[in-house]
Length: 61
Image (cartoon, rainbow, N blue to C red; front, side):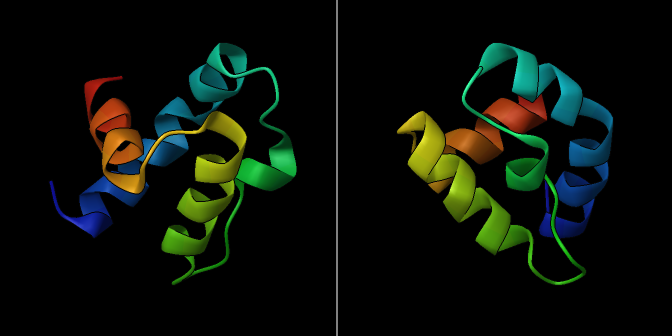
């Protein structure tokens, strides 16, 4: 899945992600155009997972 597809999927699953990881806030799950990797960095800090692990998890949801 390329980054464009991943970003599209993210819009569908971010609510599920926030439920799964209680420390993740609305601010953590939002991003401006072209800043998807920055958002992944914030999620990485909150969840303790690598960016690759997060991408795989998003793909599975």
